[in-house]
Length: 80
Image 1 (cartoon, rainbow, N blue to C red):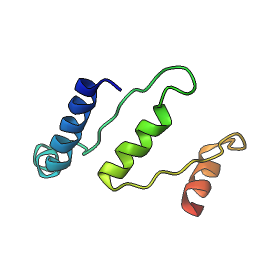
Image 2: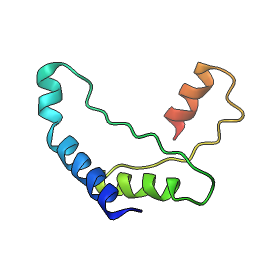
Image 3: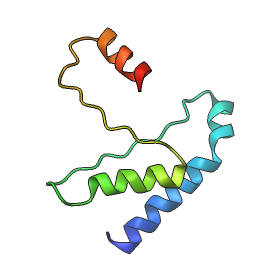
Image 4: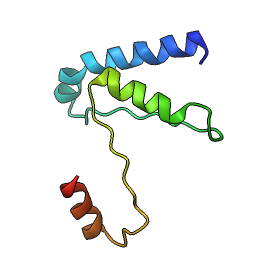
């Protein structure tokens, strides 16, 4: 990964981590999203793992091919 882009992402995550109270104060959901794209093997999953590790989040890999409706999805998420 380009070192400059890596630094930008880390800085954004640090700012986001420190801003939880601000989000609550202004009435916005405390969430952050990144759009990752590219062919297989370009580091998308590695990036997700690195971000989750940095944020102390757990990552779950769910098989969704059998999910037919919202209730089935809810059951799967509760079981996980």
